[in-house]
Image 1: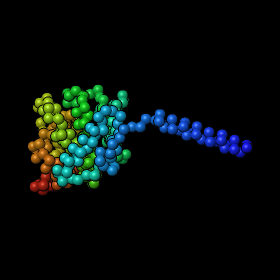
Image 2: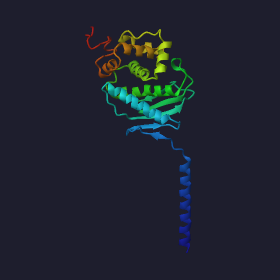
Image 3: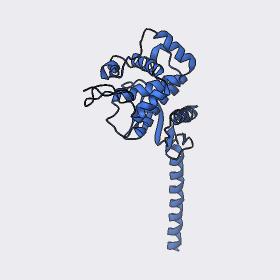
Image 4: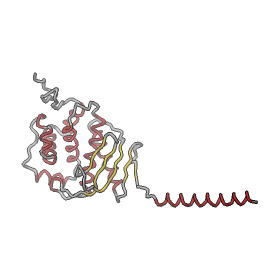
Length: 241
């Protein structure tokens, strides 16, 4: 009799514990996520339309690089968050160690004089996705200095920007000249202002053949200046000594 009563009490306790666990589980919010059709992609956001925006941006970047002959199987986590007050970057960042991109869906900035918008959120996500692709494509980490990674990211970002926004940017920055030579792309020109750097980079790439120029940079046919090789080398040039 006592044993039967003890078993009944234990059963009640287990049922209660199960109900409590289920209740706690139901209280923990589950963040919406999407793999965008790729095994190693994880887009995370609780904002309306963010996941669709992320997957569309990812597909555009993959298609862009495939056109240049670079097939990439993405492995990345993409997260949308509101910009923190002490943010180091006004738009977001790519962390290659963690395989993560964070994009700020809100920002108190006006890049190139444009008001912050969903189109700019998508644009800067593409910028960070380019960093991800270049990180995978260029295995020799020392061949492209940081400013050249930014050069490629800004060029593709502007190339895929909404036409009306790109037209406005080029109109408002018509005085900025394209970089005249590879040596002009360096940490000093980048440090003087990323927005001006981006416009000069876009104009240089346009003058040098567009996608063909980017493909040569990524494949190593064009070698940017480095400490060990201080002169720019184009395919038809012989390095000066």
